[in-house]
Length: 116
Image (cartoon, rainbow, N blue to C red; front, side, top):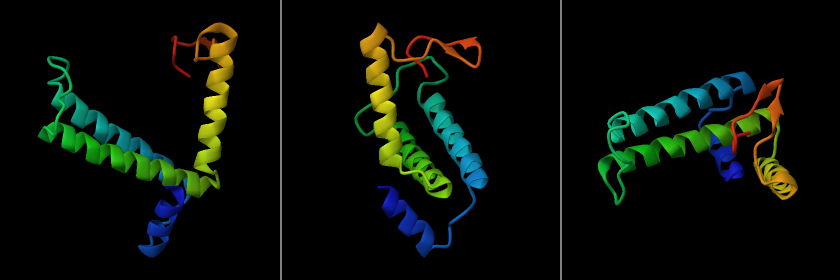
């Protein structure tokens, strides 16, 4: 998938530096959040399923997030597959060691259970 994104960026002149790619990713995650909030009426209902327009919009935004994440990997020279495999191995080790995926303390701040 990363190679496909890299080829698309090259073909259409979309290559940017890592900082720009990071800001783009954060922006896209915000747009996904907006679609989810609209779909759940700001917490008043469950996320729709089965091809509902809100689900389709969220799916499109999720695709934008994935594109931006792969583009960021390209901009940083990181192999996305290797990064994911390393993260999965880390989670497996943590879960095996103590039953929690999230680290206990990050930068001196206790972490929420299940979060990294």
